Amino acid sequence: MSSEKEILKYLSNDKRKSPLKYKGVRTGFLGLPDFKYYKYQTLANKCSDLKKKGYIQEKNGSYFITYKGEEFLNDNKGKFKNFFAVSSNQNKKDLLVMYDISEDMKSQRDWFRRQLKNLGFIMIQRSVWVGPSPLPKEFLEYVKEIKIGDNFKTFKLANGYKTE
Image (tube, rainbow, N blue to C red; front, side, top):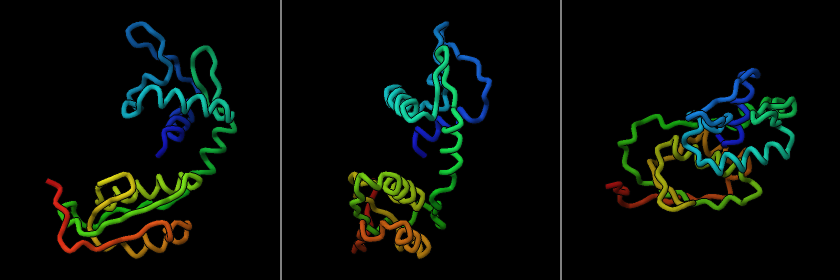
């Protein structure tokens, strides 16, 4: 899930949030542990983008989701299907996946990366992943349905990839 959607989901949960303080300094929602895996600057940039799009508002140092932001969040719920590995991560990693999904298909590209992780793949380079084969049939059908089926290639490795 993108940081923008996590911010919007958090803001849509409770409209009456009081400002948070850390060591006596008002932090707003950016100081919450929910966002500890994101860099501060990334969150600040996303908040700026969300404000420009009209999805959030800032009042007295606190951010609030707007009706437009709630509509955006509800319209994009469950946009893409999720797939998960049926077997354990101990399976031999013998399938190489290489992809080139363009910038104008960013949401599909981010979804594709998340699904590769869910399926037990590990990243070797930015768009080169290795994992257990074969890819699920439902996954391959869905990839064609969302029009990224021609943007990746798979290669069966003669020997399994060692992660040590």
